[in-house]
Length: 329
Image (cartoon, rainbow, N blue to C red):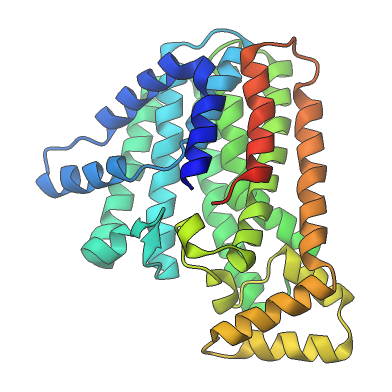
């Protein structure tokens, strides 16, 4: 994970000063008169993530024109919305860690974690009003709806055991790619405001977001907690079927399918169970299929920004695609 941070620092060098302006907006947005909120806010800032989404907002604004104060406010708002959803996700998933550190629900229990997520979401709404741009407001409101709908869709498909490749792509678009797409589109809205820029940024962000989620789903099965900072095998333990497993079911023999069903239906999955599942998925090509889809999405993202003239900002957006392929967490 430390290697990832170093790579990202190099990629974002052209927008170093812009990131400082975003961070100031983000810090200010987390402040409150309530001592506990400030304490948790400091914990969030101390164990911050990679800030991929606000970085994309700033890079997109630079690629399409010149960033404005609204670009930095939009970047802060996107990160607030992302953090709020992560806090709620950790409660729903009963996760013990986030980014290699104890999750907020583990540190302050579920009640405080839910309320903190609600507080941060309310700060997103306040920031939205501050933009005074109806198209941006409409976009963010629609994205917040998609984030929740995507998570519920995943649970529904898990309960009904009806996840297929088409519904999987629909689900990951809503729960992950929609926010990354919105991050990029807000960069265009707050700089040039041109429809052609918005369309290009939507395509780039959507395809990059799809690739990000498929990569995360590979990590869930193949990664380790030290690198990813997350509880490993969490999706499998909750019987959530992701792309490597979907393809494995399509390709597996009857005997292998029975084995997969037995592992997934087990209430307490052991390390041996997870290793056995990995072995089957690997043997029938599930992991390679998912890697191939990541490459496909990457190529589509590259195509979206190909008409733009070469610049340090375009190169950073190209490098972010490669970063996703190479990241370890």
